[in-house]
Amino acid sequence: LGGQQPGFGWVGGFGIAGDYRGFGRSGQILGQAISVYRALGKRELGARVAEKNMRAQGLYHKFGFLQRGEYRDENGLHYQMVKPISVE
Image (cartoon, rainbow, N blue to C red; front, side, top):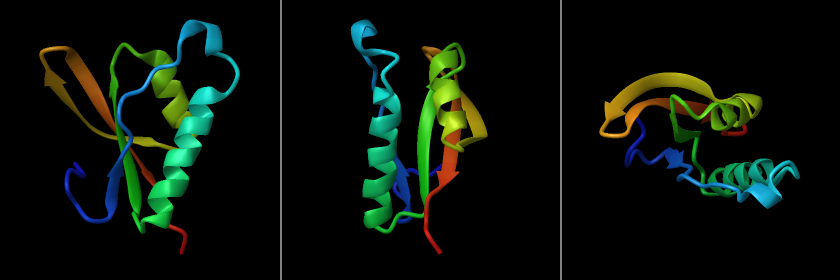
């Protein structure tokens, strides 16, 4: 999924320290990533989310990401989330 495809960008893993949660910081980071990748001409944005990370899953769903696969590694099951971001 995605990988090095020219029209595909990735959001790397990030976390918000407990004292800073609840202020919309994750949404700001994700919104900025969408803006940057759009400006770079990317058509889709992807993220990988651990099955047990319900907070992150909720964030990505809130921003319109859909699950488009899953994979398992030494840390367990992960969902591959994708959002179309191109402006036509």
